Length: 281
Ligand code: PTJ
Image (tube, rainbow, N blue to C red; front, side, top):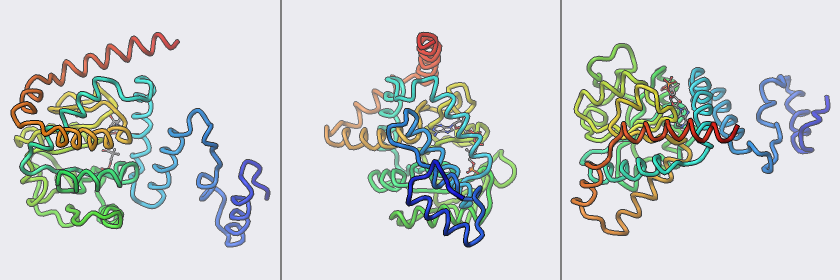
């Protein structure tokens, strides 16, 4: 069966897979040739990562839906980092630099979209990494931990939870004493609203990365970065490096943190979404 849309090498792979009785719908997406010139190349590649991650048992099935929701909001902001997002990324970097026990919370989507950046940021700060899953399964936690360790993470928490986030039911409350319980500043990309609120109630500074400025997570967090995680993580890393290069004092970072108004920043983004989306019509 000739796969017309596939490049020659992919066609050979198809024949070999079919000879082993592996069905086309199990590999089509891996072989589909998306030229770099395609206007939606980056977006399509992100989808491929999420789909592959789901098939490998790293991303939850609902992770595909969450990604689609994120894409819709990204479309509205023009698939670029807005000035308001850049400001939030800088404030997030200052919080993480000033933290005593910073922690990066990782879920399935994050593990496939930005695994290298998670490891880089955790080493740079340094910050602990903990896997906190909404749709928890021990198998998925292990797969994510293995993936991060393979990329150089020295320690990944979350495989042996020994604590619960107060006020949450079921497995999404599971966390570790050494990680989430002790942390003072937590980076929570693609977080669930209830857990974001519960972490805030525990007295932690919460930094969300969420493309939906209207989500409960966005509204509940101390700092909300309305940007795609794929753009946000490298920019936080750059802001950390720049602050250190400039040898910014604690006082000047605290001043900027205090001046930052998260809800005000979110409403500016909403205004921008309405105006910009309207002008593109
Ligand atoms: O791996 P698990 O089991 O922990 O599950 C992870 C998901 C993401 C499935 C789970 O936390 C979930 O259901 O999340 P929600 O409640 O759908 O929220 C996800 C939020 O992240 C939504 O507001 C999306 O708009 C946003 N989002 C999705 N993709 C991105 C994003 N924000 C930034 N960058 C993205 N790439």
